[in-house]
Image 1 (cartoon, one colour):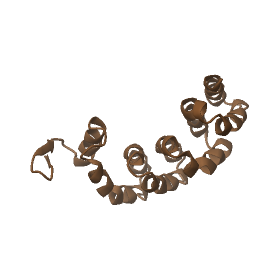
Image 2 (cartoon, one colour):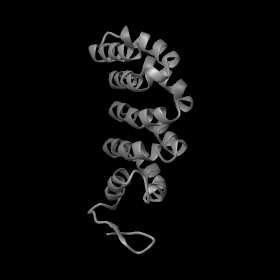
Image 3 (cartoon, helix red, strand yellow):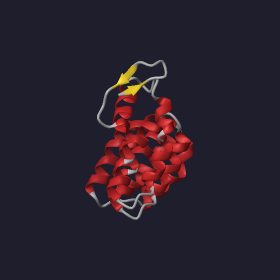
Image 4 (cartoon, one colour):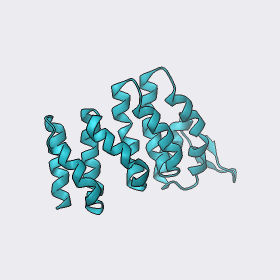
Length: 168
């Protein structure tokens, strides 16, 4: 049971951390924001765990943390993008996408670098990101998408071509 500060049962869940994440989503980041911020140190430890599956698992709550504190989320995402495991690197793109939607200026250089040297999934997700935010930021999106359209991997160039189409 999770008991709120006014001594009511906030939610019941087998796993406290998972419960917090679910309730945050359900309540549009309402009374559980502080809990997610309190979990930051827990996430920080998970990002440094030696098991790549643990590092991968932390990418999901970082997507939620990005909506509450982009700076804290970005600090952990940068560590995951620099991870030795390619799977973890590519999964770190998902919280990075959330941060990008909130404050593109914080991650502009990183997005540009990933569009050149990132893996296939990272490049594809960057194209999908610009499909979402490209119409509002065509000056930022088009130069990157132009490079991605020329990629040899069909997953990347198709996603980039689709994104260019949404920009107009």
